[in-house]
Image (cartoon, rainbow, N blue to C red; front, side, top):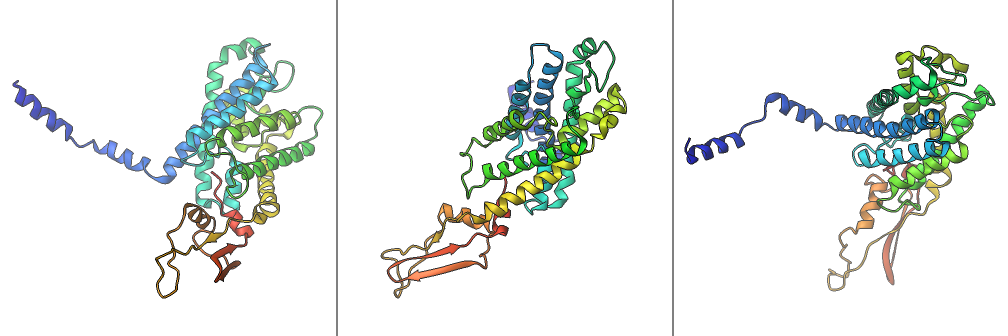
Amino acid sequence: MTQADRKKRSSRSSKMIPPPMVMRLQKVLQKEMVREFLAELMSTYVMMVFGLGSVAHMVLGDKLGSYLGVNLGFGFGVTMGVHVAGKVSGAHMNAAVTFTSCALGRMAWKKFPVYVLGQFLGSFLAAATIHFLFYGAIMDYSGGHLTVTGPIATANIFATYLPDHMTLWRGFLDEVIVTGMLQLCLFAITDNGNNPALQGTQALVIGLLIVVIGVSLGMNSGYAINPSRDLPPRFFTFLAGWGTQVFRARDWWWVPVVAPLLGAYLGGVIYLVFIGCLIPREPQTLERHTGSEEHGKPVLPKAMPHQTEISSLTSGSVSPLTSVSVSPHSRPSVRSVPTLSDSIRIQQF
């Protein structure tokens, strides 16, 4: 084959059209909801692998793990999850956070099942991964008997269980309050109108928030604070040999599903009512341009970056509570009085 023939063949190959199946797959992956589903799946998987792995070290590893290690594992697992999917889906990794975002108008309800399905699947796959990695250690520790309670229980590697000193309803209230603290602090960390985390540090600060919650409020109920963290791994243990006792033990299984939803919603509303809607927003100013006036009227300048940011807080519309003041001796300004609806429109991250 001559060199000219090889060049011609190479040029023809470079212009080959991808197979129809590849094109269809690319088209599907470009859809917004598909990308968000995959982002929630991957971020939740990352968070849960690190988190459940740290619990496995504490339960099985004798002196190789600790409760502080569990808090660090879940905290920095959340940090890594935010880095994985923060720009795609917001990296909720928590059905309670997703529920609150929908209930407060930050996200369309049609996305709720997409996010939650991605989170549940990612969490289930993470539980399967940890079971595979630590199977030998689990069997050695338990003597081959997979139990939910007792001195050689191993089901608590994957899901939370109520300790003896707690009653069911005290555990329910504990999950409501702790999840409320989580959501309230998440709003504070990501509220650009308040005192948010520095740009680029949000993932780290959110991870530190999980660590703080764990070391200060975690002992009563294991701080599930997330239906996506607790229910899918619990269902995995049901399938993997621990049996129906994972759902029967003190009738606890439904609490980490229901209580975080209520707690996150209350925490979000409390922040918006007592903090979010009371924050004075930066005023928009209309500056006069020297040498650019027509018939004594100022020419409005182009929007400055901070003006664009303020517009995004009000969905591009002027609030009914907006007041305009123009003085012949001062620059005209537009002052917007913050409302609860304005605070609700602030995107999370």
